[in-house]
Amino acid sequence: MSRFNPYGDSSGGSSLAIAGADFAILAGDTRHSTGFSIDSRDQSQIADLGDGLFLTSNGFSADAKQLVDDLRTQIKWYHHNNNDHKLSISAAARTTMMLLYGKRFFPYYVNPIMIGMADDGTGAVYSFDPLGSYDREPSRAAGHASELLMPFLDNQVTFANQLDPQTGEPRKRLDLDLQTAVDLVKDAFTGAAERQVQVGDTLEIVILTKDGVDRQYYDLRRD
Amino acid sequence: MSNPSEINGGSAVAMIGKDCVAIACDLRLGLQSVTVSGDFEKIFQYGGNFVAFTGLATDVQTVSTELRQKHALYEMVEERSMEPNTAAHLVSSMLYSRRFAPWFVGPLVAGINSTTGEPYVCSFDSIGSMDVSHDFVVTGTATNQLYGMAESLYEKDMSPEQLFETISQTLLCAADRDAITGSGGLVYVIEKNGKVTKKLLKSRQD
Image (cartoon, rainbow over all chains, first blue to last red; front, side, top):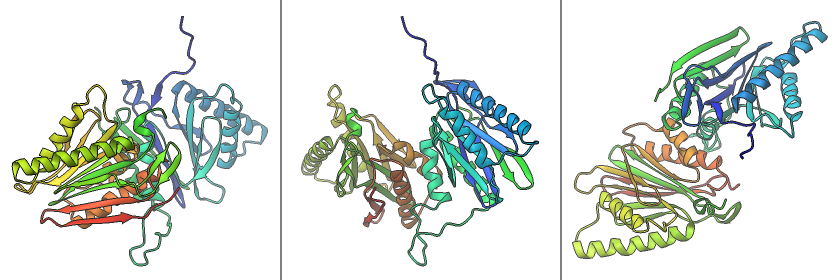
């Protein structure tokens, strides 16, 4: 007799986030798979939590969905208790930590990434491990292609291993402009879709600025 | 980490450019998480052919030495230099001869064919299955990271200078996201005219 396994391997492909000086980007492919079987080619994995917050959670998708429900409930109660005050991303990130660590001994099998605009107007990316350990970062990738995407982001967003051709010193950090960042996301995903079978179909990009939200879609390989 | 291919760590990558090829490896030798050496070169030269071996260090040394003997014998018997595709088939048959007790290595072959002038890169699994590529090949514990970097940085028909920059950034950034690859890098750029440039790369030492 085999024991029931509460965790499955059904999951979204991969997701990625970049923070800028006045924007934040969250992108994910729309392929959903179980093992090597494709369940759906148009399953969005980016959840709109309200209050200008967006979340992806790669890993086991049933747990990912439950985490989103938990967060929506928390945000609703926060509004009830605080005269509809908007939940800041730093508070939302701490709330996410509380929810994840609350299940310390039966964890949600997910790696969440959250984006929003911080109190000072800068774009914010927060990433978490399944138990709630979290940090604000310039960029982050999660999911099946995280190993392929992350070194590329290090190199192109934080300029890891790049030297200034004039001085020979490490290249100074500078804030990316929005178009450059969107182009990086597209390049990263077309590359990942080339080598990772669980990634493909369509790329969904959510772009967050002070003016609001923009959603863009691009085709990826469908094989 | 009982997988023999992941005990010592290490990675390599090779790329084709316009009338040139480049091959690069990291310099780390470790025992699981403990770094033992930072000057363990994984690229070996056999005439005009450059072969990188990643995997179990003892097998890297055994196979690279055995290949040295086979290469020397070939040049004596045939009285001509060995072409890269010949070297690749030699590596392949050596590995397949150990089909049921394999050497735990992941080789790459890079070179330029001396008659056609065509650049050539090829990768293998541990039992000799060949994968001849028209752009780039990767191997080692940072395989995924190398694929992610190479797939997004690589362009067709790069000059030797562009190829050096691309393969170096690919190796360095991939190594930084793999704990058992790194401790510096080594890059060979081989040009059609026979010019070979060897450069050492400094990198993070953690």
